[in-house]
Length: 421
Image (cartoon, rainbow, N blue to C red; front, side, top):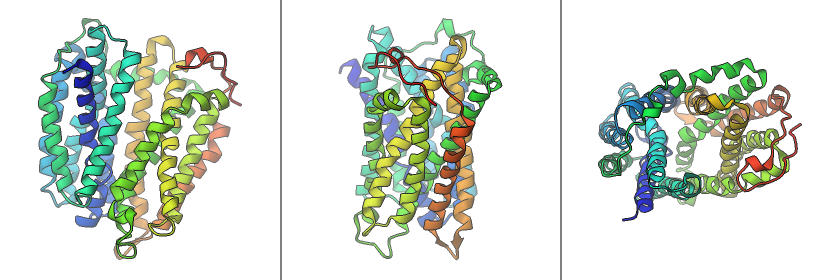
């Protein structure tokens, strides 16, 4: 088998494991296990907590002592065993601790997967910029395939979704040990833990514009966590009135439109950046979250199905525009010596602190609008939409940015971008 095909299998499996439970697990806990919104939000927040430090910690292990593919394999094996254990748990407190342990070993694998891919391609003389993106896109395909598999098997509110994830994780962990060696790099051994997780980039907070940017990165990260946690649980609650509708019968298929949209909107970013500039594209992202939540609030699986579909499509814009344009902004603004750390700090604010806040706060909102076990989903989604609206009102006044970006700095562009107002 060719090297590229082996890495395609790795990336497909990496996100298949996650896609098997990430979107549907909230519905399982609420519908089947009868957990409260606060309990579900708390369990999902474990991913944010783990993202604050574990990717950096295991990155140092892979940089200094153990081959990256072995660290990746060990993490997936441990994660698979923990997911098997989670499938047997019915108590929210115990579920929290098991899923926290799973997050501690899974969240670092996202970065380790990239490290292994980059390392193998580079060692074989491939151009990473050219060859890795077509390989990485199979990760998104794997995520969608897992969602479809769980949905079509009728396991969206069943612990069997965890079995799929667990056995996939175990198989992927074993497979990782068969990959070409990615030994520790001597050149990286001087890197400190603080540098690895982005803490040496905290100096960027001295710059008011960057401080505002990173703060909003956390707030937008919270918005992402909301739909991951409660999107499918919301659709499951329509079973009484719309039992035979497509959205209720196949919530996973409907939710997967979000990931499909994500792959499409990535391709539009060069155009939007060239037309509107970085500040405006980030503003578009925040406004997209307003519509993402608002359309959930007014849609339904019957006559309002088109509104739910539009919400899924808008997700691609909401997610990609802020994350990718934000990463570009960090790359352009940070000094060369701390660019890697600055990107690490960006991920900590979005996937770490943002996800932690989003998981905990959204759970409280869901519980507030729950009476005798019945959730007022319209009010819940309107609160989330109002949250995004508040960010949209504040952002253009708080974030001052008029830097001119040369198109030559962007893949596929040349010339100069108009400055953001």
